Length: 316
Image 1 (tube, rainbow, N blue to C red):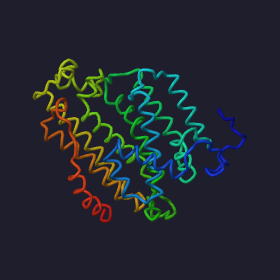
Image 2 (image 1 turned 120 degrees about the horizontal axis):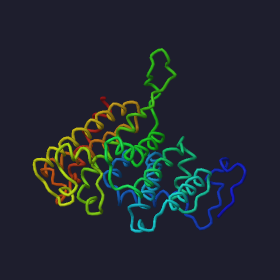
Image 3 (image 1 turned 180 degrees about the vertical axis):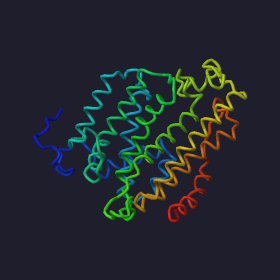
Image 4 (image 1 turned 90 degrees about the vertical axis):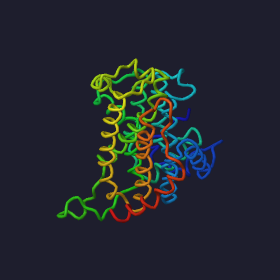
């Protein structure tokens, strides 16, 4: 391991020792490939961004994916709390300007260009700690904290890259003030993660996990045993309608923050929001059977929504 100098923050990406590492462009290309392979809808949205911003988003996505795979990937059985503690130390070295592999290098370069704060990254690791010790959530408040840590943090990271529109002041008497859509970024992360949870109920059940709040299952007289057996009946459909309605409210809250973003970020964010929210429509079309049918949005439909997202980006 390299020893940190007294002032590592002053090191630029060009100055760092990179023996055995790719070029910066090569590092970003690796991140692009990972994003394109594992996050197709998300990747489509990034292609609508200016090059520097989309490359930064790819670097952030790859770090988030690597973090998630510590508890959900092929080697997850070997992950302990100490593994996550070591990963957080690795994160600190990245923020100090010392990459240990090509993916790190892309993120270090991103940190030199955008005002990213380390706290959302730390919070995401805290979310992985939750996955290590929990496979049930009693209330929505408990689930909300989990969703914030593993998904809303991504929104906060991304907002720092996308930037805000300085022309949109939250206070007419203070034209220098700039509105930062923090709450809306958090809401979009909550909406996206709830969408993931609803889409993946069956897959999670097969891994022994139930993310839907247990008190809400009880509210609809639906049991853990019913869920594990994939029972789809009127109780389940009413429960899912309730879950989808709440998730759509978070999407609506998130929409209000898009106009505060930099103009060159609005189209991709509108696109990503619209495309991901359409998974909820797919669940409804499948009559809420998320145990036997995968809810997804076809590539043709994704493309068809892009002009609508563009119109919203310029009109709203």
